[in-house]
Image (cartoon, rainbow, N blue to C red; front, top):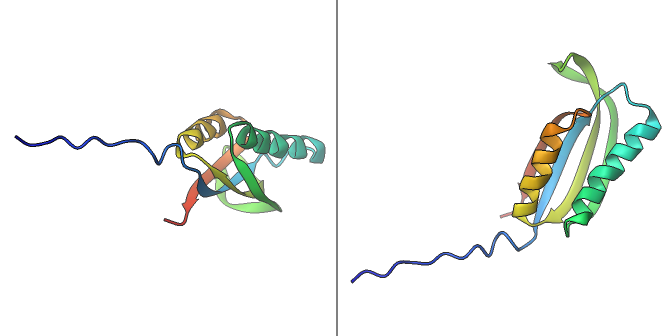
Amino acid sequence: MARKKVETKVEDTKSQEYELVYILNPEMTDEVLETRINNINQFITGREGIVDAVDKWGKKKLAYPIKHFLEGNYVLTKFKMSPARCKELEANLRISEDVVRHLLIKVGN
């Protein structure tokens, strides 16, 4: 009789390192931009994540128009969070009107 292997989702509870690059609406004022960046960081920390670094690259020209914008405010955030919570973060970024584009990458293994 063959035994069934039972898999446990240990990876979903263990924190992984991630890098998130996102482009925000270029028409935002500096105050609104800071508030939006802080909201994203609070979303991460509010879900047991740890923000290691936030690097604001500033306003840059886009390679091609996205949502009728020719430029955007680029931000890189390095953080640690469980993979299950990252799905929540990506869903939140996807529905946000301020986020023109985002890319979430798992760093390491």
